[in-house]
Length: 265
Ligand code: C2E
Ligand code: CA
Ligand code: CA
Ligand code: CA
Image (tube, rainbow, N blue to C red; front, side, top):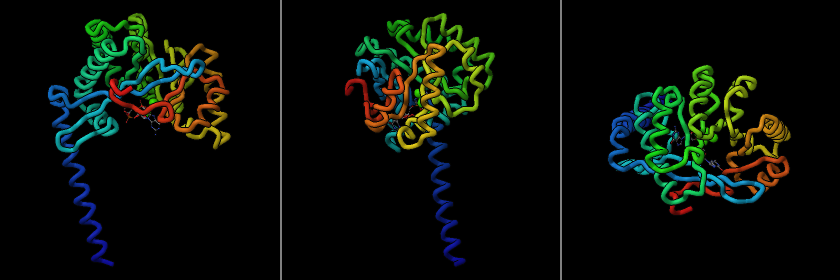
């Protein structure tokens, strides 16, 4: 038993060493990734449930690393957020997305994700103004998605930033709604247009009475304050039918379309 125990420890050592090595390597390489053209965007359609038409796409970052291959944002966005790299990566993402949409799909709304650190950046508003202007994208066709937890880090600052963004004409969405512990009253004072229901609730639709009750009340509450509701993570046709019956406005998920390069949509 003792040898087996030591074998396991050795195994985890190797795994841990590889993980740390990969992390350090990625951290180092991410700085150059935009210049090396390794970052690109996958776009996932957002569908209007009344017309069944695609109204918007969410831009999701991808990194094709020369050694490790395709890497998802779950791994590198957190890395970037721990340093100033998020601003470089975020700016690159915004310029690329704005340009691609303006050139190839000007009728679609574009929605992109902002991290907490970007929200705190005093240059955010002018960066967004410049990116849309440069790409020839009207600010009204851009929506920024911000998570509940990012908004709640400093609610007063977030409120000011959101107001300036609103003045610019961009739309604002709260992402992953339901996963944070924000006070609803506080959220409702922010100038938001859209609320995205986190996919953990969508997953429970039709399977758990609790999830269905939560989604029902989120939709009612959001509509009461004139927010558009998007359900994330729709994977099953039954979920879509329930959302339709509940009066949800829009939906997104593998059942409706997977993220893909814009040309493939
Ligand atoms: P998110 O904003 O909540 O984006 C939705 C994530 O769920 C995406 O993962 C998408 O591919 C995935 N997804 C979509 N439909 C389904 C479905 O039906 N089932 C399941 N299981 N998953 C689905 P992805 O692309 O790996 O992105 C993960 C997160 O990384 C995003 O979560 C977002 O928070 C962040 N992210 C992505 N791109 C950017 C970016 O450009 N900037 C920043 N700051 N964050 C980004
Ligand atoms: Ca999002
Ligand atoms: Ca989300
Ligand atoms: Ca998420």
